[in-house]
Image (tube, rainbow over all chains, first blue to last red; front, top):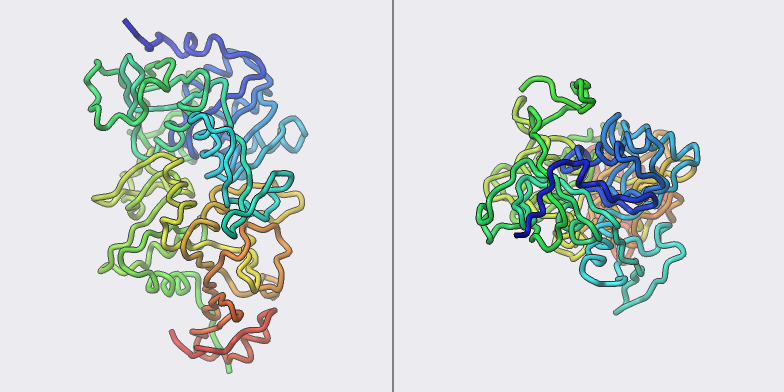
Length: 245
Length: 219
């Protein structure tokens, strides 16, 4: 019997090695696999290359990875948010290398990795500073930049619901990078709020088929869905908790 | 003659009224987000958000916020009935693949040939591009929404961008607080000058030659 469900976030991350490239889902706060990121910090792997749309917010999650000094390089599209201070301090101190990638190129580079495409020509960034040092080509009169596939050793994604074969569905715009990152890493670990029996997900509506998923771990759902930055308080477990509902 | 520059909301309203029914539209972070507040109620317009939403609706009522439903600026939004969620790679295929009719973007500078600089001020700032370059090359029509002049009074429409480029020759139209300026093969064509602003004055303020074709006072 195939059962990809593991009992804890600790066991899910046990084999992450120093120097790994870790793809972490999420856009802003939506879709960030916070419990897996916390477990990655506790696990202790260092010299990591992190791939995420942003650079962490506040004190928890990806921001805490920078604070703990575990990140050697960030591959990212938008690190300039007001509360990304832990990344910004590490970057200004020369402790973290930064590779800025246009957002669609970031996503497509991972899609390419998952789809067996070595590199691709994209019009995005042609003629800009972000194309410097890259091969370019004019195809039917239009300029393109050659971008390389981006593969992860590990992908950490957040989904809403999964089954023991690894099939996943997401919730609203928290889907964002989850499906693409799932396909682009050697080991993909998904955290879900709910595990259902086989057949419990409508096969017409499965977003990430289990072939892309190595492990699933169930995490408890938090109190409220919306966590405004101003009202985030620190719970005794160190997790961000929403005030109110 | 004296004139009152358009407010940001007034520019946003001009843009909103120019968006035809049925358009697929992406509104950039910052000033362009205001356009969403002025879309005519009697038109169906599909708002796209880069993080995987088509048919994005307005901000929720207080208490109805959902952390899984945010816009590109990471603010809470809603989904219209009939709207759809999809993943990032599909979302950027919509952008890069030419499926969006209009992208409204802010800008630091636009050149006479429609080059766009809107992602980086250079120097010491931490670079952050987001989806700006994908929108710039991908949307069928890139409209810029910006103030005509910098705080120091310099024209943001320039012979050649001095800030790092976002895209080359991508801007089709510029909405400013003084006029609407189309980027055409013949050059920049100014129209809809705000009441009280003479073409000669607009030309004096703008760093590059303007074509007076279509210039007329309009609200």
